[in-house]
Amino acid sequence: MKMKIDLLNRLSEFYKDNPEMKGVPLTLNDINQVETTLQIKLPDDYKLFVSTYGGSYAGLAIYGLKNAEMMGDETVIDLTNRARKLLDDLKVNNYILKSIVISDDGAGNPIFINEKGEVYIYYVDNDEYEKLGDSLGEVIEEKFQEW
Image (cartoon, rainbow, N blue to C red):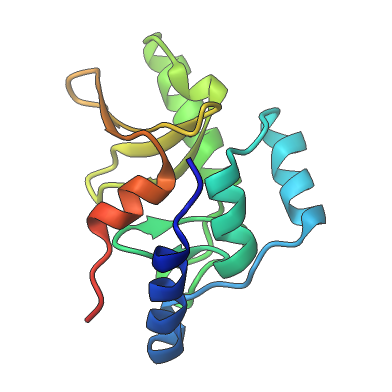
């Protein structure tokens, strides 16, 4: 599912008024680096978001390579590799091996997108997955509020 033009326009307006919430857009080379490093094809909605806004806040922090200052220096590669290692160490069913971790819920539970573009959260303490949406666009649409 493609992100809706209306949502992209709302995000662009929000970042004009709140530039500290917007990161540096990823180039095609950056996207290729992420795909090669993590050995996964990035979902279209995620590629569109990070190539337009970089790692930015959109109702939730969505990490790229060059994030908004308020998000810190961690990258999508860092988050994904840390979650993969954690889940491998725990010997649990590791769906994150075929996904990218784009955020967390503030309590250390990774939010990730699988190759189909579906967004999930993994609750580490009770080893449960919850589907947040069929696409990143759907999740942003639900969580994003202009101030």
